[in-house]
Length: 463
Image 1 (tube, one colour):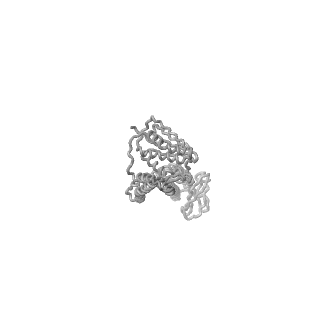
Image 2 (cartoon, rainbow, N blue to C red):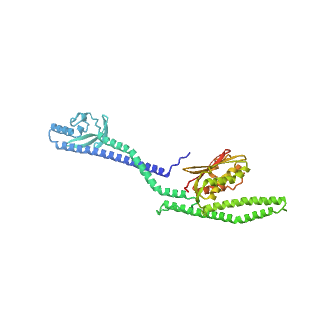
Image 3 (spheres, rainbow, N blue to C red):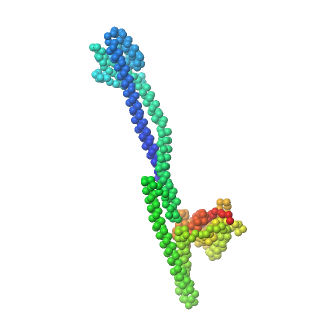
């Protein structure tokens, strides 16, 4: 299964990754710059040390050899821990080593005797920079060499690197938090557009998503959504108007055909074939009239016109009346109709009596039609502090689980076995609409060859 990440999370990860990469490159550049600076400083220290030593040897060239050796030794001990030496061209020492360390130090040989040069050597587990520089003292050509340890520089570099690594978690946390904040702030208008678009349905297509005059892509997105909604609203209104007009205009001709057929049936001289034909016309006209009435009801629901007048009523009375109306049909189908309603109880809900009767009749009619002969249908009314719930349960053919999400859609009929029962596929759509205008919750639970249970929960009201 492919895992989809939100745009906010992806932007956060990208922002954190780019920020971390930038910090990594910055850290490497700073480390290299610090290393170069420290090496340059170390080189400068050695150059200044040799320059002072050369001046000392030049200034004392006319004194005795003993004095010169003494001045050299004192200078070496005073600077650089005594790591200084003066060599002749043949590689021998011009003066005795000022310290034991200088005598044991692995001084490199000069590759170029015409100018100064730096060398890096290892001694006793440490790295040293060595500067060699030729100079002239009288007739003698000497080579001054001085060494300085790199341990101090390495310590600074190690601490700098440790600080960089230690700051990784904090920087990642800051960058991720900053990325998430910026991404959420940038996508906040998208969330508003999404919420507004999600709230728009077939019943409120006139609403539009908010447009903020920012001149950016989000403004163009909102304007595009509104243009699409306007086109949808126009198309849906045309369909609604056509349905309402067609249903209304067809009522007259169908009623006329039915009336003519009923009058013809009263003629005692009609032959059997004609009488059967007129009977079929009456039955089909009745079904067509019922279908047109349902279409008109849904058209009025879509147009939100002629809404029912709400008033407090006793739901117990409505349930009993509908059940008594359905009992003869249930008896004809040899069903057992059980009604669990306390006649002495008063359950007040805010609603329209005729609409609620129609809602309950649709549920009972479905239970009777889709339950094989000698089935059982149970109707119950249970009131609690949370509301009043009417349940209609049968042990009929049931509804396949794949069809349950669509049964409240218009003209939807389930599998062919249910299609054998007469119906237009509009009853449950009307029931759903009636439940919604009464702020009730209509739900269904069903299993194939076990049965179906419809439940309608109404909010209570005080009379």
